[in-house]
Image 1 (cartoon, rainbow, N blue to C red):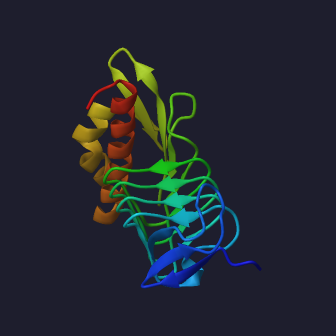
Image 2 (image 1 turned 90 degrees about the vertical axis):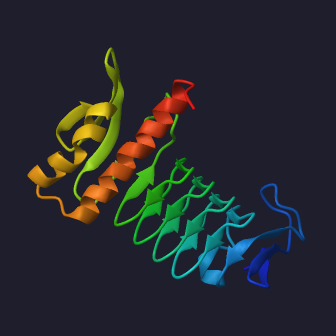
Length: 192
């Protein structure tokens, strides 16, 4: 195997050119070589950190101030950036982008691409969460068999979670998914 980087002062340093990275480029923070594959064009940049048993592989990128840790995986063409966190046993893959202050955790799986043509889908601990579409009264999200507008979910998520016997951690997990889709739809609509 031809190594593509070395670890120097806790940062990855490119040993050859690949995927827009030049030999000598200093990347983000990794704790060991198990955190960043030598195969593909994956890379950790800026002040991003990957540690514990977390792995970045394929052509994935982790940058800005993002953190990937515990047993999390980021692979394929996925990006994790801004102040996003991916942890526990969560996976981010495909063309997914996790950003802003998003948190992906538990056994969640985030994949696909967040654009109007490809709708966000999250595989949560208990149910799949997916963007359903835009209606006259707003964007809608389906969690399991229940479809509501984002506003309705934001107002009722705790009550619905308790009715369906979710514990507090699961309720917190699902409100993050709702919030992420809310943020994405606001970007689609040109809101700040």
